[in-house]
Image (tube, rainbow, N blue to C red; front, side, top):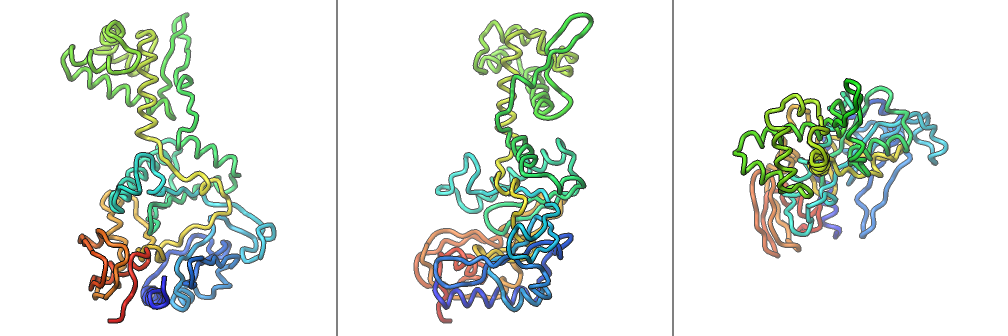
Length: 386
């Protein structure tokens, strides 16, 4: 990034912070603060080991220094400004999750547009929130658009702050369904002097698989017998004989389905449940970034600050507003929508931002400032003289 571009962005970031009100985290004075300034050259410099008192008034600091990126620690400390981690005196840490569009299974960063990647990441976010709220029962959940390639989720329910890295890794493994024991989803239970095998229906991945089993049986009941048999035979390991047996024991047998009774269907039922369990994991697990969650001293972006790699706002999202949230509209700083700027595009292509789509060739262009800032922050353009 050349000097003119860097100075322009730093100046406009400072202008943004004159009217912005970033959201301070709870216990802000107990957290470490860090930022990345607009340094020259390809390398970036992280300034950290600061308390909020070292920064002075947060609003004044942001206006004055206009940092490229701003962070606070998930952890709380006795002395957050101490120069080493051992001296800080760790008190506890928020449980933080990170979803990054570049790391989603099935999403190719080279082929997908930025908008498509963010849409895929929002789908993954919905799955993560469903797991956290439904399976763990977490209630103090804050959702934040990272300003870049994905979303952060902060969980601050009582009792979580003291969890060590190993305990947090167990949560990660559950959310990602790492090494899930599919056979363990079926238990053996004593019923009327005999034993039978039942799908675990009361919680966890067993409950989720049971929900898929109910939906699958409802699908079988909605079609004719030949189609239902074909649907069953599409499952690896289920032939015509097993399909016929399963139709006889599940279709119309509401009690067996509700109980998750796989004994009545014999080996075919267990094969079906195993296949549905794998489908459930693929469709409902969340590909979170494990190191972010297990790191009890992690720095995370400050909501309300600007992301120096996009010029978009790190935007906190009310849970009720999540469905309607469009990061390429709702995270565009209003201050950057009021005028046009001239830039030299060095990496041509399409840009979707603020409800419009632009296809830009290499060379000089006059574009809405939010588009210009986005391109310059992503090193796709340089600032030119007006």
